[in-house]
Image 1 (tube, helix red, strand yellow):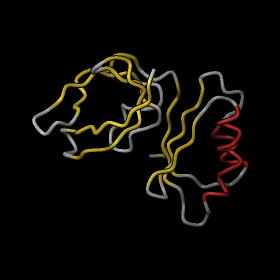
Image 2: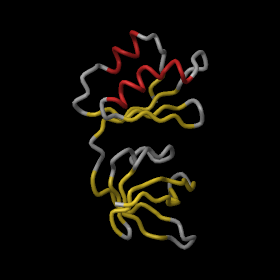
Image 3: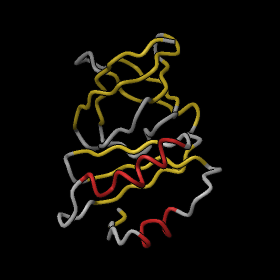
Length: 132
């Protein structure tokens, strides 16, 4: 499979985002990260698109939901991104994914068999993350 960059128009939000996806066929794709604007398009989600009049992709159908548990947090300004790296690194080491958008929003993709309680880690590290 080939990784490509596509522009996806979100009718509801009236915004276009650029996504890196794995192209499965002409109009079927698998997410390689998380779309900040569309919470349904998360790591591993497979979807089908059509090309609209502006030559942008529009999602017409979710073919397969992500196998990850996806949670989104607002990062507090009291901490630097490096303060979150311990949690992020452990997550990535165990097959998960950690993404920060706009410098203050983290999207976390947790494998279903993740051995640690993410809420407990956040609490133990006193990270004061705000779930959104």
